[in-house]
Length: 384
Image (tube, rainbow, N blue to C red; front, side, top):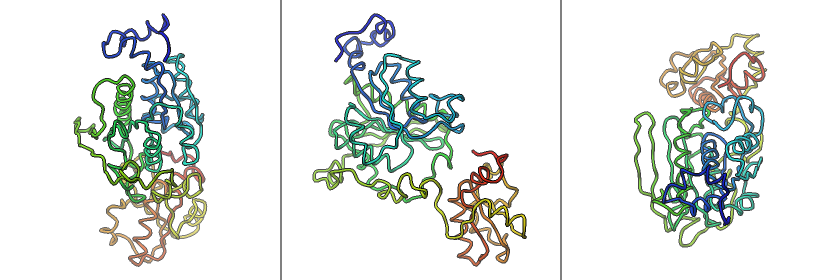
């Protein structure tokens, strides 16, 4: 632990030093602490900025993405000038501008079973700011195997949740969610949307829990799952008990080393071409092939997105949301040739399967959806 605070640090952390629960001893604990942030996105933004401002001495940031315009609505650690740059680089620069005393480790790489134990080893605790199930299970298992607290948070649309796993004999993430949902059941934030301010609330809660753990003060969310609904502005809480049969933290664990988490969650291998797009159907056609068909023959275009998505941008096709399609088949002619699309191809693949099961033999799926159409055919169509 550092011997003391400098004069500048005493001035910087004066409001902390005035708190009996922090004081000089607590601020020195923060200065000596090291935290690994998995993700530099919506949750990672408030986490990194507030932990840096609080004086945590070392922050590691793992993220393999570049900043995109669609990130700026909620990922406040990045700015417009950062679009196209690695998130870890942008985040590190913002952290250093907030507090140059913080040492930042940049990991511009995906967190995988091959590198996770090595990356996590130097840190006191890990904060999960990810948006996918394979990495959540990976982070959980690393924390259990290295006996480190896992400050967990997740967000979707207007709702968020937070907890602390693997701390003081408390439950782990697998005790709450033994199995991941089936692929495609839970839409991603890109498809389902997220209120921009929501990750600020949940990420700040995660940061508070991390600081409390470092200071040894207060009651953490270990054994409790905090549920937040922004529309109702309500917080609810549910108890989470440790599962004695948990395969990772139970009495007789069956998972004692890291596994293939993509396979565990029923997803394509990370980094593969299949992992970069939505699930495909046997009747996929490319945007360029779709364009040729639309120009050369009588082809109908069916859009199975939601009405609010259609208002953002559309290809002037007939709109029937996927959830309504089974009840509105009578509006379509089975003899027509149709190209079905959604945002990225996942929902339209399901729609094509439904149509073909009901006698529509001339329907095809626009691979990559309206996003791929914008990238490969018509860049004037906005991506969202």
